[in-house]
Amino acid sequence: MPGKFSTPHSRLRLAGVIVLLVGLLAALCVHISAADSPDTNVGGYRIVNGHAYAVPFDSSSGEEQQLERLGGKAAVWTYRFDRWLASLWHGERLACTLAALSAIIMLACFHVAGLMAVDPDA
Image 1: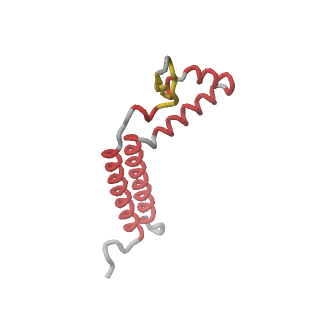
Image 2: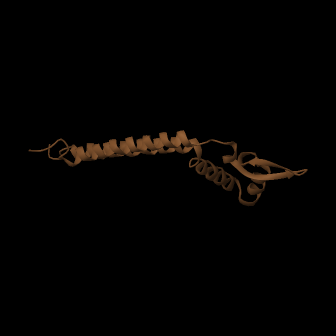
Image 3: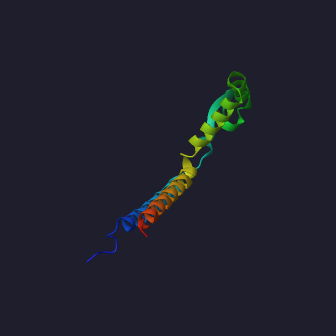
């Protein structure tokens, strides 16, 4: 007697739901434990009169101008994209990234399962 998850497309849908639940649980754990401190966006430090001041990545316009002179606008865009991509893997943004990736994987599983359930002969 066939069970509830005896067909490949139903097992793939189950796998998608499991991926979503585990991903959301991991995102919740990361969100609870992540301390989004201002030190996560530090590009460097400047010392003025013996005091160290944090310089965020986004406020280094002089460095971006020098980068533009050396590599052009494409180098600046690549630098900004790299900074944005690196920011997705720290702090509370990691929780959002995990939730989004698990939802995308679940949707992909559901899509493939839907394609598998279609009878090509009909």
